[in-house]
Amino acid sequence: MRVQDHCAGRLRGVTDAVLEIAASESFDDDLPVPVGTLPAWFPRAWAWWDLPRPPGGADRLRLWADTRGEPFFAREDLRRLRHACGARTVADPVLAKPQVRVDEVSA
Image (cartoon, rainbow, N blue to C red; front, side, top):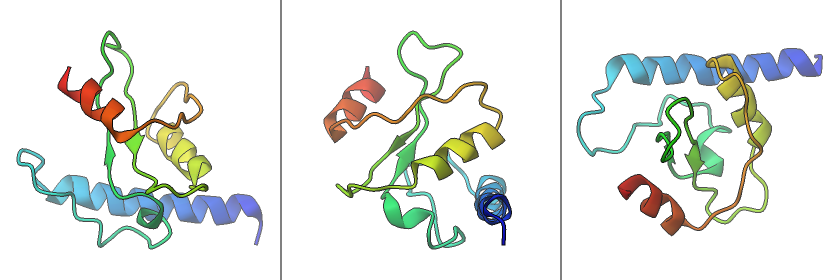
């Protein structure tokens, strides 16, 4: 199997599961997002994600993922997913303490 076919299959699996969650869940409450339909390789590397608009970034979104301290995470899978969702540009990941996210979201 070609690498491109493998990556495309993984991306389709995640996209299908994410679309199912988006169509069936209410995001108006503070309940955790159900991840049971996501492929096992996708949710294992991080505990949660968030997609807030950074301060002063009307045309930007910032993806937060908790890697649970793992030294490796599937950053290229996240990059491909963001591009597949329509991102024009995607910046490299930056490691930050959880409090940085809390401070930014509550600002």
